[in-house]
Length: 233
Image 1 (cartoon, rainbow, N blue to C red):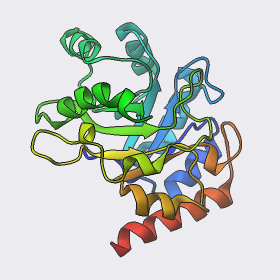
Image 2: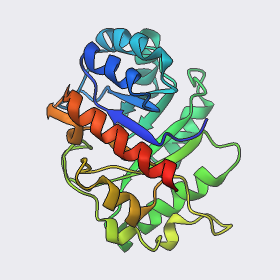
Image 3: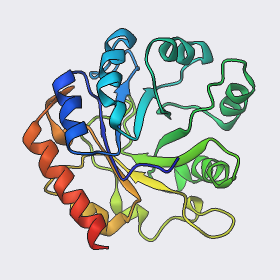
């Protein structure tokens, strides 16, 4: 499975998921981190996931989960991929893969990038992502926040990502599949795409009225702008 070009994240309402389906987004994100303003109970997420069956990737967002917690969500809510948005390590990943509960789903790993301070952790995950047998299919770069895990509306520092830091390059010199998140909206997304040149974008606050409540006009406008950009390349 390839990483998505257009991912809308943090759904809590059926009508918003239905519009995402209508707009043919590549992925939706359902947040299972209890401290998030966009958290959904697995029982509620099950209905949202069913509406999104026509979407290529239904992604469950987790922050420092246990293997059992992911399994409990999957028992109730069908997902196509998992997004790790905490301090998970490669050691955590190896333990997860060796567990009987391992569902074999593709994984997106979200990380902030503040410069050299984050090079070591990026290099580790990039090398993992470059392995042909790894479940990690892409890396999501988000704005750093010491408390909240994504969906803050803060912008990632785009200038730090061009040219690509060496820590973002695999052994063969190619960049890891990179998805850009953090403070994107219809007014700045084209500039962000031109500077960073990611394979995809991930949005939550930039398409909302309030956390978890999507704006249909913003969703449509964002979808049109991103699609036009990728089609023009």
